[in-house]
Amino acid sequence: MLEGSGIRTAVDIMVLNDTKDQVLLGLRKAKAGENTWGLPGGHQVTGEKISETARRELREEIGEEAIIHLSNLVVGVRENLIPPWFVPHLTIIIEGLYQSGNINVVEPDKIVGWQWFPLDNLPNPLFSGIGELVGNYLRKQSLVVTDWQSEK
Image (cartoon, rainbow, N blue to C red; front, side, top):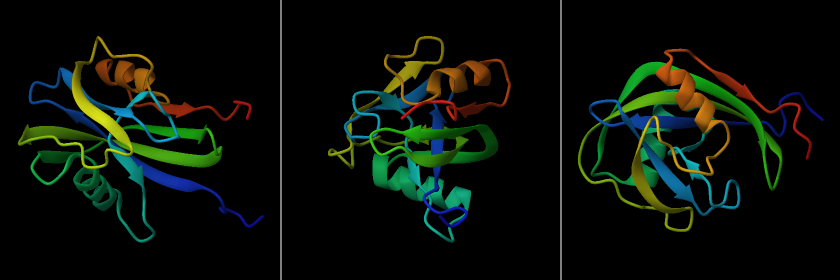
C-alpha cells in the first residue's frame, strides 16, 4: 500500500451561538455514525484549504441563509476509524460563531435535523469524540481524540 493511501481528511465546525453557551448538532442519518449527534463538516477536497472546506461543508449541510463566522481557532483534532467502512480519518475541528439566518436541513439523506444544545447538557449518543471535544473546549484546552487502539 502506498503511504497515505486510504487516509481521508475532514473538517468539522463546532458552531456556537452568539453567547457561546450552545453548540449546533445534527442527528445523523448517514451510515457513518447513524443515529448519533454530530457537528457539521465533511471531507476535504484535494487542493482546498481548511477554511474553504469548512465554508463549503456549511453551505452543503445548513444552507446559504445562515451566517457563520469562522474563527482561526482549531478546537480539536480527531483521528479515527469510522464504522462501517473503517477508513482512517484525520479530522480538524474549528470554531464557528453563528451570526444570524436560518439553519436548514440541506441533505435530508444525511441529517434528520439540526438543534442547539447547551455545552453542559449534550444529547446522547454523540458522534466520535464530541463529548470530549466540548468538555475540553469548556476547560479551554485543545484536544486530540484518537481511537487508534479500537478494533474493527
